[in-house]
Image (cartoon, rainbow, N blue to C red; front, side, top):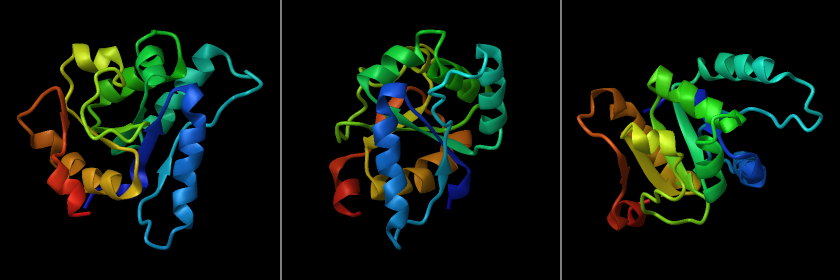
Length: 165
């Protein structure tokens, strides 16, 4: 079983509503993993360097990352300036497993949702639909085997995995 309490959620700022949706899952008694993420800074009170340092501190506690995959995540994750771009760089530096939770419910590895630095590095990721059961499954299977896997690039689960959940 993965370290479900050490899951960092990365997302584009336009996908904050999807993170809030994930937060509502916690009300379900069957929901058994905890996660955390950067909080939006609507006032823009922190300097870019202070924000980057804070994100690094938060991410060094993580064992794995759930990245909310979307066109905005692809754009921001590769722009070199945004908080998500910094999160992508740090997660790669730390060698953290990445579960890409597709915002639209698709079950495939959607390269149009994955930030370009992960694709360019052929980083081993697994893409799933945005849903609690499949994310939990990915944290328990993919994330646990990430360090020893002899794979690279984006992957996804076949339909029978979803059928069994």
